[in-house]
Amino acid sequence: MELKEKITKAFADRFGGEGTLYASAGRINLIGEHTDYNGGFVFPGAIDKVIMADIRPNGTDKINLYSLDLDDTSTFGLNEEDAPSQQWARYIFGVCRETIKRGGTVKGFDAVFAGNVPLGAGLSSSAALESCFAFAVNNLFNDDKIEKFELARIGQSTEHNYCGVNCGIMDQFASVFGKKDHLMRLDCRSMEFEYFPFDIKGHKLVLVDSVVKHELVDSPYNKRRESCERVAAQLGIETLRDAEMADLEAIKDRISEEDYMRARFVIGEKQRVLDVCEALGKGDLKTVGERMYQTHEGLSKDYEVSCEELDFLNDIAREEGVTGSRIMGGGFGGCTINLVSDDKYDHFIKTVSEKFEKRYGHAPKIYPVIISDGARKL
Image 1 (tube, helix red, strand yellow):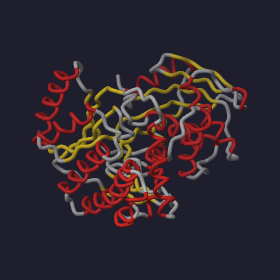
Image 2: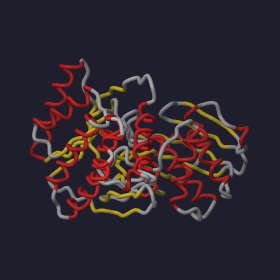
Image 3: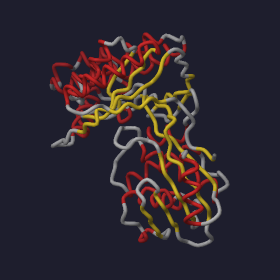
């Protein structure tokens, strides 16, 4: 049974009749890693893996939820003190509260939702959930008056204020603004963005999930952010967005080796995003792939956020003649994103699965992805 049928059937069984179907997507980021908090560019797209919800106003001030995937229910009111105890329900409660805080209207509703965004693979299932409900609440109770960027901010604030995750805006932005067959270059400083056609004829995008998440003793993200901030301060600029390699070289003897390496990656990554955008415009997938490999190298050696398993996946991609491959996401586990030509695809998937399992005792998970639309009413 398709996702849509499963959800509508569960809604009819639980609440009777039917509601309105909404969906929002998980996302990939082709290139532009650890650039968001440095005022740089990211280059995400929404994918064909979604969170879908069937929703109907119920004429009360209570929200009744059923998570089909978790087989769990939650009922709560719309005041701050009504926060549900289940973590999954807090995402939806947070979206409602953040909408209300911005002067939007939210009334009681019944909803059944489920998804096929793989969890823990770095595809932002939580942002898809937030965007799906933010879009729905805006459509059902606010006549679509809340503009799209505000919907993305509602999702981001939900993470900050109700789920304890201090995330950037990229995931929610990609889920809300996603457009079929297009990637989006978002300027994380000005919040301006541009759609770029993503025409990869003869190629496929596939994620190879190591299914590994290394437990980190300290907070490596914060440490890297601090490195970047120290270098920016030394250069007298707000963020590394405004730095060039020559500026970094000029102060090399005034900063630590570690800070130098971190900044070298970020400044290089800023340029790589721009190079990839230009190359895509020319249909030059060779350059796109080269920049992806360079990003992996930088994340592994300079930013030091890779791990043995991800480097192994990247090495196999290179050996198999994959056009481009890199770590996707914060690092220390998770996926590589791979741009693979059709003629090499089957052999690559077979080889990478066998070699990885032989070395690490478990097979990686394989997720082919297609660039699709973001938040929408179905």
